[in-house]
Amino acid sequence: MGKIIIQPYAAMPKDAKQFGENPKDWPFFDKLIEALPQHEWVQVGFGDKPIKGAEQVVTNRKGVIELINKCDTWISVDTWLQHVATLTCKKRGIAIFSRSEPKMFGHPQNINLLKSQMYVQNPYAMWEARNYSAAAFVSVEKVVEALNEILR
Image (cartoon, rainbow, N blue to C red; front, side, top):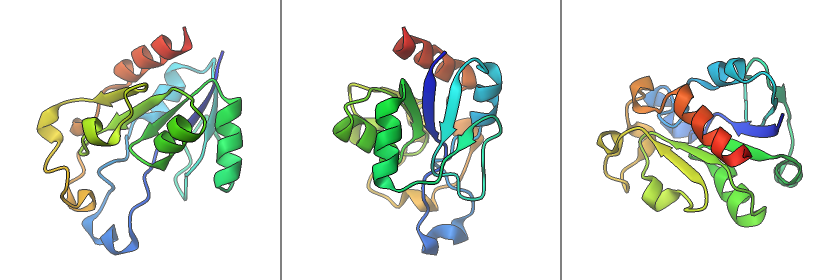
């Protein structure tokens, strides 16, 4: 059993809400937790969308760093958690990408999951304006495989 921090959602700039759903938000965290109930799941960055089966923790950046240091690993969409966990806490984890380029925004010591390069558009374009598509994301099975590799 492992303690796993998750950040399922990336913050959208307020002026980008007009574009609809966030193209970085992996839609399968609930299925992942359902598939692996033996782990302790702690969710940060949930806003008004808590993930069933995860403890929701509201904390500041210092509190998140403390949580990361106490966890076995982390899983995050392409957002600030992967950078803090990797660069500040030196904790290896899983970053899930869809529309942004892991070669630019990922860290080589992590497992950077990208379903297909075909979903990555101009890495310098405004990612918020890209269309949301659940098809752009890796499956739950791929994340389970990556998690098993990290927790070995």
